[in-house]
Length: 414
Ligand SMILES: Cc1ncc(COP(=O)(O)O)c(C=O)c1O
Image 1 (cartoon, helix red, strand yellow):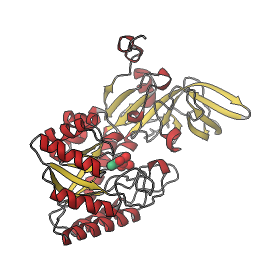
Image 2 (image 1 turned 45 degrees about the vertical axis):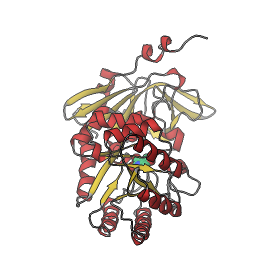
Image 3 (image 1 turned 180 degrees about the horizontal axis):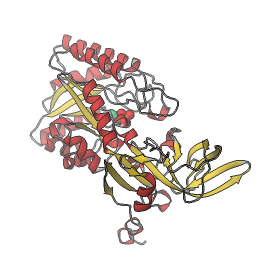
């Protein structure tokens, strides 16, 4: 990423030049990095029946989605908005899975009309509504049941979704009951089982346990005359974070391939989001001010938690570097944003070389759950997004204008 003089390059573009041209805060994505991750997954899961469904929530920029769709990826969506985005981006309906604990009737209708691969259903009441909605349209809804496997993973509690006490899925016993019910229901076409362990997982063991559970549930179903044709293992593949090892892609793929062999003719789905897009993205921000408060050195930058929420929400650690480092000793500082919240901190005690107001800092591996989790909190317009492909630089989302944000006509006066 850095060139011979230590300047940060994103493919053929200098980070400081991009910051000057488009302003900051700015998300920059490298197409080569995205393609590299996609290739790694494609190679690891190159086996008949495997389907890679990109979790659109990780990065919902339409240009990024279009690239992934063009490369033949499927999609995992969790709302009517994501479904629309997936369809507009060119993902094939027959490769779209629809997850989420609270799908509405409208969202079900949209999925049924589009002809998606399956709905990952998370409760008995949702199953009943999906059946009624499908019957009213004269269709049968394709259904998989989301199991909460109660497998603890070593990630932040906010991103561990398969723990006891989490809202996702149903217990393995309940999943069996719902699967049998779905198999008998005239409005439904039962297809299989779905699990998702959480995010930022760096071990193969949780996938091994998940696969054992899905295999044993499908054997129980088979014994009762119900065959599964889809086994969906969810996402959660970890992406680079300081102090973490690499995600064991080969070991996880061999675990899941082994599981797939247990069921000839099965479609085996994985739903990675972060693994594909995190390392392709960099958030560029400009240093506004330096100050020392009660003995702590602070660097105040122009990006805030509304632009990049992960550190505030999950305590996520992201490396922060100057785009154009100055020579000199490294001194620790807290890198903070301008938002009026004490959690608006990108990194504490970071040992950075000398920096001055106007310098561009880069928050690395910010391509997943970055822009897509952004908000207008503190009435701050959302940043721009740029895609770099070699020397080709494309603005793929313009910076939000204050006039768009403060559209008074849409807010009626009392
Ligand atoms: C059902 C489901 N699948 C896939 C993902 C993607 O997770 P990750 O980005 O960690 O791969 C999520 C993330 O929340 C999810 O809820």
